[in-house]
Image (tube, rainbow, N blue to C red; front, side, top):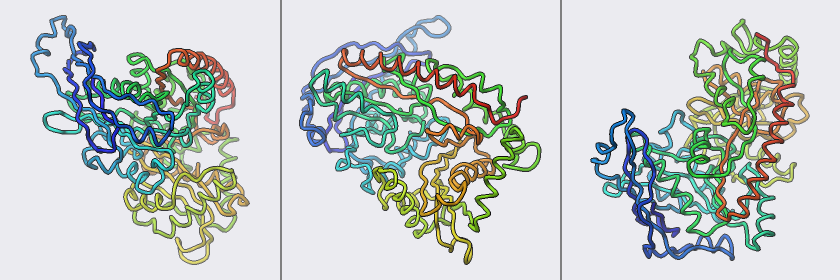
Length: 515
């Protein structure tokens, strides 16, 4: 398959041929040779003085072949002209068309707001995820060679560090330098900056060519890694399907993690906790829960609290009582809670939220990755996909009190994603964090008919508030065989620890009623 140039130019043409076979193509490399395309990699050199970029690119032809489902020859499929693809790199979202990117980003089963053009471009335009901050955009584009139509893409970055990824590999970097004597950075990351949210990473336009394009995109990622000469490629928070495909077909190392998600379905019971599989599995439990809400509106909760079909009435009595008391205490402080979306979010709300965000990062000795401009751009470009939950003092009309705390969520087609939280002195208000980040989010999702709320990692306390442990997945390609073997053994041990964690969680008292 054919690779690219890492220049700052939006497109450097390189060609891949692929045949789409309707009954499952068998990948076969027919040739491989040096093609003499100069690889100028200023981004690599700026990220690390020890960059080992190659000076040439490689080409191979990929064709689909094999027997059809009815046992007949694949000759009929081969009669179609080969799909000619150009794989190239864009050094900024500004070099890609908004509409063409979003067609690919919305080509899956769900619309994930973090993968849309407006979100990714806001990261770059606000100077939050740019080369100066250790994020050099190297977005992979797959185009139809003859028409120029964008058929696939992947948000990729050349990283000078591991911050803002939420899949932790700092120890890998230290070990890599000790073992090889070379720098771990720069490395390549396919994912969304500062966003630990599962979603498709191989974005493909729907159509009969989708399978061939996805395979070409998957193969090109490894070849780009080899050609750049970097230490590794990391594809974080992939879907379970991508986890399986990239692991089994492309040989990536596989890694799992745990987050806590609320599922808007009355089918959730305490007994489902016993169905959790081990981390070595494909994520069957996570996939099962992801489909729970898909059983239809009839299975969703009627409200947060109320009749027998409400969320609280499906919890054990002790947990139901505890949540009601927590909400009551938060509201007894004389505060007003607002849930703002779209045009209701004003610039002064973003100014206040940025103060909350900075207060959180400053108190926890963290790094404020996101600039103030990012939040304003988010509101201007994607306000209809934002839920901003605010707590304000009760004086004056709603929206005109003094904001003291807030929680930022993004709205997808099937889920609500909790992202950032902060406060000025809200930590002195009992249960305010639970109210803004958990209960208001659940209430909003139930009212909107969303299937789930993803509250991120860290916090077994979320289990007692209706959020269930769910797997996350990532895959990793390390060209150095010796170091790859070391990491593989590490991941094997990590999975054993994950299994122990899951066993402990299984023994925790579920908040849900027994069937």
